[in-house]
Image (cartoon, rainbow over all chains, first blue to last red):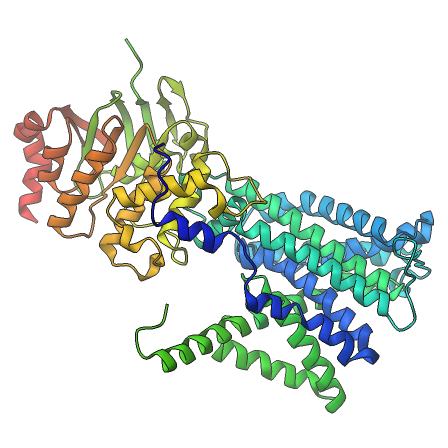
Length: 338
Length: 251
């Protein structure tokens, strides 16, 4: 090694080293704006933050590593039940302990199911994920004594956060709590995807057949990210339990798995922010449409999905990037695109 | 006597009733440049796939430095110093050249499981990737996305990714396939610079290139080894003329 830094390595090191861009900082003012702009709607905003975390979890496996899953609610549900059972049966109501327990339980479920997911790819992976989800749903449905079955698991009482902030009726504590957890886990995910490990996951998505020839144990890497994403989904589920103080069997519903996939595609997969943008967009549209047209709102949602797939295949983020390039080209003239 | 860098013993591969590789005994001495030639369908790429671990043989064994690696997967063989390129590019279309080479370098340096610091902040990785890219004379494309590059450039990246793992044994599956003769000459000159003490097994169609580059040549016909000798003697071998060079003239 000569120790001479090449002229082209230096800018790359600076550019990619993970500094937050202005647009990102701007994005993260949204939760603050939301707090002041919609004080009446904090429970909805909390739901958006939780959904965003769930979609972020899916982006780690699907968008970054290219694993196909239509059963991600399995881990959301495991986390939700773990966070519900801890106070309901063991009397441990500390929310942070609940998050840790949920993450651990979901990660365990992820680790156990990863060999199944890695048996195939593409459609067979999709089938396996749906199967895992369905089996967990029926298990929860059957085990009424533990889960409450279709009646759900009530009596989830949380102690105040850090012993100081109790979960109030207006959902203020819940909102700040959910947003802070989302930001923290987003920050970690952002680091992970830029790390050598994260880049190798992208490599696997782009060309899984080449990676072994570079010395990469592909299945081991995918098992790790599958487990990590499961833990993330588990935390999202736990947040739902803790902020609603109830566990419905719907946490394991197939609808939820399908919805989060649609949200990620709507926002744009593979960039992390797509998950957040997708969650904000979907939940807002859903809320507004259900107000305007309570009977047929699903029709309009369907229409929006079709339009997105036809005209912005890479989601809201991809469309935004193209519009940005277009404007840049108009201003700077031809040849200014990247 | 030291063990050959790469060796096969009675290597066979059958796809159903079709025998693609038939009892191949290959010995490739450390530091040699060994070419495998043969008509289309002779089983050359199948042989590379068996050597690199992409395929499991039906019977027979593969040895690296005398050690049996038949049961090891591709990535484990890479860690033992055996790397390959692909006849058809297997690249990372949406990554820049620097990114994909840096990724390969990071894997060789054993950093692939590091999940916290950005890849671009590993100075030793970025420096090595940059040096490799400069050495292969594609520095001007370092920040271009792979998909935006001309085919000839992409072919060099295919090789750059393999060199990033600093192989002791390099399997080149028609590295110059699809690029103009003049460029392929340059490519081989660069390869020769870069891999002075690397053992190379080369699959190639262009006989001029083979006779210039290789010091040993094996002829594969119908999945079996026909002859192995120096390039000059293989070229004048009557059997080889008949089955290989002879048929080539008819095409």
